[in-house]
Image (cartoon, rainbow, N blue to C red; front, side, top):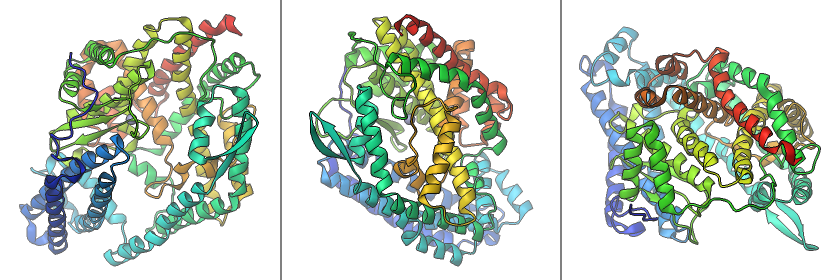
Length: 601
Ligand SMILES: [Zn+2]
């Protein structure tokens, strides 16, 4: 097998970040956006009936623009990720976001116009081709259009958001940039940026270092708490005012609608998790004992557990490719073939070299009908899981590649379905392939710790955000109140099992300050368990399930989440059974972990 560690970007646009073909393409897209804006502004639904050929032509252009922007975006962001010194690539990324931002006006107009089509006229329209296939996303756009204010009012909100909502989002970043965390090493104090300190906090292997740093970390955020509290209050206030203007009474509705799910489903998920938490606490306590402590602190939960020296199994990139394709093949021929293709055709950038940004991601090329995967491969079992995770994303795009753009835009809560599934397939296999018990414990530890974050940490974020918004509806919430709400949420979510908490987490966590969407938390846990439940079914049914799995992925943007589960898994997400089957996967891991570590404490 060939094992090129670098991706092929020339096949997308030739000439790197200075590519002339790319610039030509961006110009075309820009012109097409202007054209589309005029077309949708002048569109009169009543004059377009009964065939709605104008609407069809608009949707075609919208598709071309969306695909074009994604293709160019994957290319430019990719170049910059692989070489952060490529400033021209950064420039192109910026250029694309400016060009693309004009689409929000097109979208608003589009939704507003759909709302003007009379109900029975509309029913006939979406029952016919070429609209039929996209009936669900179109219906959704029309409903959103119904909630919007007048064109003029929406424009005012959008313009004021730049210095309001978005202004506060930017302000958050500015304050974070001014945060310094003192760090003592070998008797010398250095000052770390928030990012550096966060890495040390979760990555440091020494519990004493983490404990000391956690204290300084907490203090650093506390020092600037009044600034963060103002920022959070005004950001949320702006959002609540907008909801109020649009007649939206429940702040939980927009994020639920965005994720196409019911509140009953969300509540059932948290309730089932909560029932199973005592077992997770057993894991946390065992992990603490392995670290020589009674209880873990906030930063210990994700820290690597110490099990003594061992030689972990390492993988060459070639081994990793074989490992992943072979194990994919045990479940789905198509997944295996796609992974093989990804390696053969240069979809993956994996080389361990300087100048690359950290992290991993998968990005879609809708025009080439391919994906590009970015990561840094240094030979660990975790790297192999990451590779599988990103290939899972690529598989999701792969099975959707022939669908209209409207049917490809799945929400955050199902975005990690295919990736987590692929990762599980591989990480279970790496645990089995571990060279020693020590390595097995370490791998299980990182797997279960991630679940613990989903069940406890993210639950605390959800509880906090809900209580904060409730309080914010009645006025400003000062920094002390924010810290109190946060600490109470953390204690509740962790069943009071930790030694120390992180009361100013509301300041240190970027997710509370994201302007595009609120409640950037429960979709993580949802996605994780949704995928785990599917994985559990796949283990029971084997290869025969791979076709159903494929159909499920294809439908992820074509119906509500409850309908998706009902149609392809025959389960009711408002009932506990499915959630329990997903959680059982983790409980089994915990049992293994407890057994393997029993005589080590
Ligand atoms: Zn992912």
